[in-house]
Length: 103
Image (tube, rainbow, N blue to C red):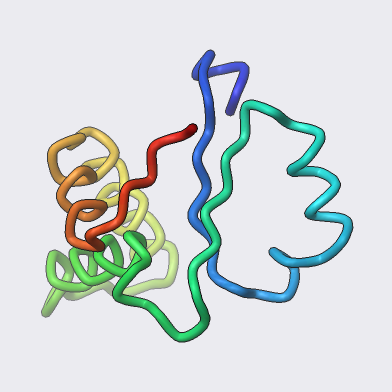
């Protein structure tokens, strides 16, 4: 992703054990273009992805799908819509009250 975007990458992580391992710390330290914001435990209100999932659930409420494949297709389509809406993504981030700018 770094090569494709040509700029810094910002990750927002919870305290999942794989995110806090020594191996992961070394990988992060070896990539100066990568900034990781670690959220405190049990703080979903600070995680912008929670707003993404809430938006997705709301946009798909009462949507009838017949197969898992159809559901996967709908979810991918809805995620693409979110990707094309920088204003929406900015709103999800703003809702947290945090500043996730790279240093």
